[in-house]
Amino acid sequence: MGDQIDSATAASTEQPGRAGGPSRFAGIVGIIVGALMVVGGIAAWIGVTVQLSEENITVAEDAAFMQGAPVTDPLTAWAQAEVIQKHTLELTGGKTYAELDQDDPLRETAATASYLRTSLFTSIVAFGVALLAAGTGVIAILYGWSLLAIGRRPY
Image: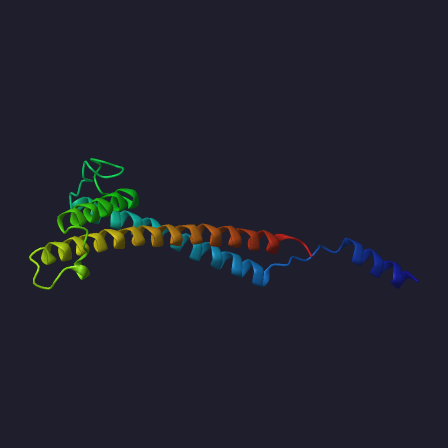
């Protein structure tokens, strides 16, 4: 009978276990990967901003929005790309590069305008990817933190 009491007492004073292990490891990995993604996203955003700034582009005064602003972010890049399209279509009589005859002297101007717009739109996509990476990194950090919290709970 004494043995039964001792085992019951031992069971009731035993420290609760922790879920730890895999969830803690996954949580730490999530936080580290998330932090790297946030840093990478911020670095990419800064890199694109610096490159655009070095071009010294200013949004044209007849743009639909952001007139006179330096092109350093997705909105100003979009505004300048749109005004380039507007000017090109005015110059070519509403025709795009592909619609102009091959011997049309305006074809080279339309091609240059198309290249400029493509470059500006590429920077807009780069800003989007940077934001996506940073946002995904924040989510990974939150999931990692949650997994760490689960790993600390007794089971």
